[in-house]
Image (cartoon, rainbow, N blue to C red; front, top):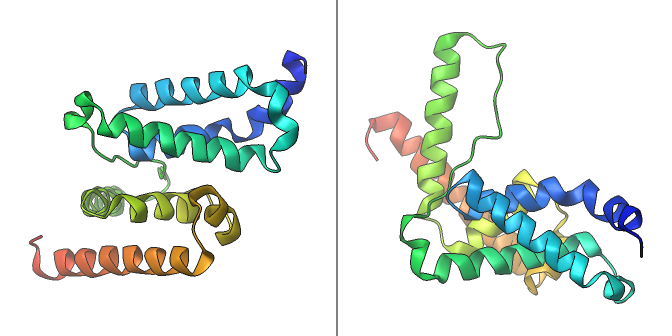
Length: 169
């Protein structure tokens, strides 16, 4: 496989790999390192691409595993979730402040979610993967994925509602 062929296969989903890494790791730098590491592993194993049905799903699984290993390592003490994909410059300043505050709260709430729920929420709601694809990536059945996603959303909704209603966490 040539470098051009490899890039044609990998480039369409490299941003998804980065976003998943950024969701799981603390900083842009950590996410960039993880993305580079996953792409390098894919390049080193490009001769085995034929045996993978879905290279994108395989790379997302690699990213998840790499990031979880990194989180378990010694320097994981300082890692946290940050999500800032949403920016809209066409809203009034007050509304923008409220949206940013809500996004910050969602990020804080997500920090407290179980690791599996964080991953499923990222893959389904941010990356827009189908349940069947997530099930393959995480080696789980679709029903368990749906239950975990429902619980994660319910937790976020409940805590965000409490925050906005009472002004306290």
